[in-house]
Length: 616
Ligand code: PHB
Image 1 (cartoon, rainbow, N blue to C red):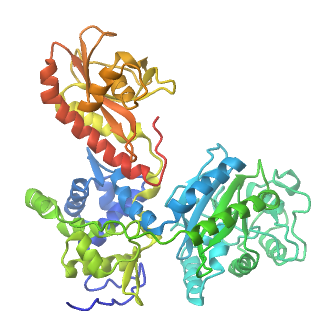
Image 2 (tube, rainbow, N blue to C red; image 1 turned 60 degrees about the vertical axis):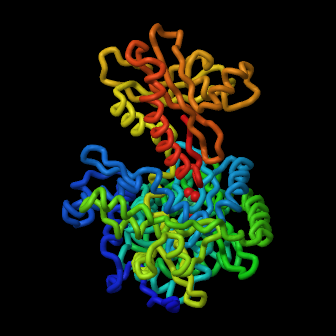
Image 3 (cartoon, helix red, strand yellow; image 1 turned 60 degrees about the horizontal axis):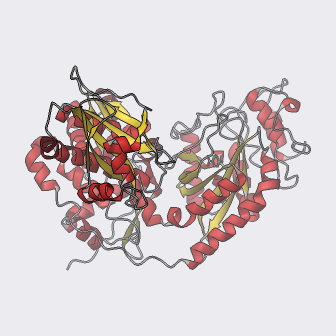
């Protein structure tokens, strides 16, 4: 057997493409990234412009992604589908932190009634791996997978406290080449109103915390600069929160402000300040974000350390708004409770053994040959094979050798190796040369996760209902059960184009016992009364009913299960009884309805692995 190959470590994103990199995979990843940055939807010609690829290449890549279930082609648009989240899920499952810690983050959010997030370091940025969001009107909230520049966040200085000189060099280079943070689409660019620019336009970030002597962040002044208000009017002005006049950042600020107090010029040495913040954060074990991203948004953060190495595994933040807490106030009142949660999290990390490797997947890429055969030029097999490499990782499978990857995918070692070289070049995979293993990096979350991470069952289902309705020529709908289990509520639908087609408005409620949807939903639990009828529905997996609330209406419904197997919704086809006999419904419509339910479930399960999918 040939020895495992150790590859040269490529600098992610570097211009030099390794000779063995797989070009179609680089292009396919580029297409997914552009779609992600566009919020999940882009026209094919938009993709052509954004990627610089020829139209024929864009077409072949998108049809390959469509075959994988990662993209839906909707007229002229390519739309990311929740199935794509399986790539980010592979990273999050391998990482373990969300599975181990998100419950405690959620509990803290409930206790404080504030948003709580978990973030990991992603080179010189921070990337969110969990969000327990309290939706409030006042400020933007970030999504799982969003990347923020370290120096505009509270977790940033904590991570930076562990940076090597090479890391600092990378950061300085990025600051010089992208002073407005254009490479971070999740944050407003600096230099715009609301763009975190209250601290000197394009430069500084004073106010992240106070000087180490005064410890009082320059909240009032910075916030008011951001909004053009005098300090005294700032809602975040707190007694004693102004910067000591002789502190370094006060001097920096006076240099950055003209006589009216408005920000005017770039701070003289803004980057030096972040270095100081990182030192303070490393020493104190906490850091503040006082409106670095946008006026009003404040956060306090504490690192969760790995028991064995003492290194930062992730950072927990409590995020609020100045209308409720000033940054200093957050530190004074909420930091103790945040620290208590972090202490618990560290105990969990230290005491949970590494999971035994889950059953190794096999043959992940074995389907690609048949698709190539079927679709020919419209299927880029090297892209499909390459993408399956990412799904070889997962819970208990965070560090894989080349042999492991080849086994899981069924790809030849040489093919798997070229995919890994490509991913390393793209910064999606990291090699641990000591152990000759590969791991996914947080950057895998940039493949679709942010725009897909806040979806709902109706949004997932609608395109599939439309497709089903077109295939069978009848109306279709999705419904959930009311909390008291007496009614069903329609939450998505697709209407057939027949003149006499069934047309039920969204939001309509009907008695559960009078509809096939209701029968399917009620039959999930054993404690429902009419056990006989429900048992039959449960056993056969569908309900067929001539519904008496509307003359001549016949409906056929099947259940939708979440990842745990619980029935959470039902889908139906509704038609005039004169159109098809009961037997024809079962023979002709049931297979189509089941296929649709399976497609919806696949997307629901991918989306629901690490995010909460709203049923409404
Ligand atoms: C967030 O979770 O939204 C968050 C966390 C830390 C920050 C800013 C935002 O500094």
